[in-house]
Length: 141
Image (cartoon, rainbow, N blue to C red):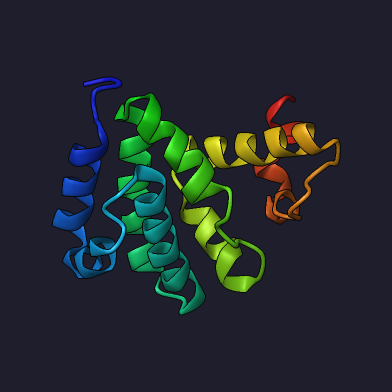
């Protein structure tokens, strides 16, 4: 089932896995990027409070959608979810360790692309949190 998950299937999975997010989505049912931003905030709150079980579960849904989503779902995840997740700090580093490889790869690529666009390495300061074993320079060896 590659590239077949569209907005409604993504949101259906999201609400099925995390029913508590549904009321938050109600005011944002106007666009995929806004809805994906609500999911990002939901994940960020779990990171901030150190609820790594919730973070891992939420990353699982994000990874599923990234692997199986259509172009719009994948784009929304990169721009409205991965780009603004705050992974600096103790809890952020723990969360990064829980991120599935495909999602982490997309996260890293999103920040590298942003750096290329702005002509500045790591403009949001996020790539510095990658341990050496997960950085691109280590992966090339």
